[in-house]
Amino acid sequence: MCRQNLRLASLQPDKFLMGGYVRTMFETTLPTAPFGSTGHQSTRVIFGAAALGSMSQERADATLASVGEWGINHIDTAASYGESEDRLKPWLANHRADVFLATKTGRRSGAGAREELEKSLERMGVDHIDMVQLHNLVEDDEWERAHAPGGAVEALAAARDEGLISHVGVTGHGLRIAGMHLRSLQAFDFASILLPINFILLDNPAYRMDVEALLALCAERGVAVQTIKSIARGRWADGEVSGPGKFSWYDPLTDPEPIDRAVRYVLSNEQFFLNTTSDARKLPVIVEAASGDLTAPTPDEMRADIEAEGITPLFDAEELDRI
Image (tube, rainbow, N blue to C red; front, top):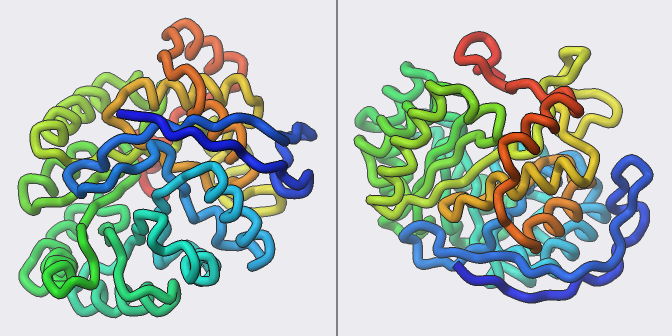
């Protein structure tokens, strides 16, 4: 693992507001690491371009300018993230070579996955995508369809052979996903996996055991491990996933100090990459936390944050596993 040193230009006050708290100028020294066996040296902070999904083009352009200034060289989007792929298009016209570009398909049939891939290429104005991921592959019936002859896995492997994409990955939510990723890796040579990781989720013994088994297999095979939900406080109190002031389907932490500890908790494990939240207002404090000392917080510190911030698990392996 290494770090790349960059200086962040001044942020406009209307770009990144966090409860009246504005980040302006700070040094970024983002860590980088090989992204599995892909051959790409990725920043360990990956820009979650779901943040662009409901933005105006002007705001998306400003956000991507900051992403570039921070030196983030890996972008993760999805066909289902609103207008995200469209918002990326103008920026990619000048910066395609600067980033590892990943998107996702939620289709399980081969024909559907191919159709969505072709639309993604068109929407982003590119002729090649570095990685396409099977989005949220957690349900048994969907897994069977995706892996069956004529399914999405076969279609994406064919697109890889054609040179339209370079790698195939798989993602998912919930406490069942680590076990499902183990199953997926036994069936196909995926380049990366993505799953939720934070302190309160890994405090669940069953989930932690599955995650540890998954990490061991990923290390053995050179599979990249992407994490999501690092700064999740829990579900929204009103039970609604969207509404005024809600830029992610879960309630994220807002105070910089707990965010700093949550980011360090993830990145202290050198196997993990951290995908940023869809709430772009949190980007500066995440980047600043990732640019500093990545020593893991103590369990006592994390438990104190759980108490003070009212942090609850996003998933429970039952109804809350489905979003």
